[in-house]
Length: 131
Image (cartoon, rainbow, N blue to C red; front, side, top):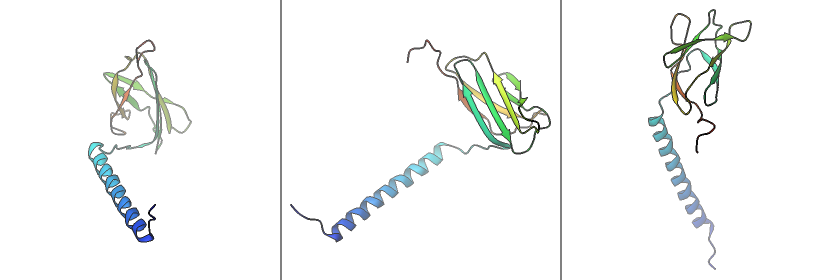
C-alpha cells in the first residue's frame, strides 16, 4: 500500500478546490443569465398561497397605502382588503381559477401605478388529477 505524502495531498486538494470553484462560478453565471432580477418595488413582503381553484396573496408595503391596491390576474381586478390599521398590510383572495394553470399577476395602486414587477403563479392540479 502506497502512502500519500503531504506534498501530493496538497496538490490533489488544491486541484479539487480549483475545479469546484470553477464549476460553482460557471453555474452562478448561467443562473444569472436565465433569471432576470425581480423588482419588488414598494413591496416589503409577499406571501402567496394557492390551491387548485383559489389564491390568497398577502402583502406588506414599505409605506402605507392610503387606498386599496389592486391585484390584476388575467382580465380580473381584485381590490385589496386592509388587514391592519396603518394601511401597510393587504390581502387579495381570488376564487374560481382553473386547476393547473399559470397566471400572470400584477399589483397596482388604486390609480393604476405599478407597485412591483409582474410575476407568475400556478394553481395546483385538481384533486382528482392523475400525477
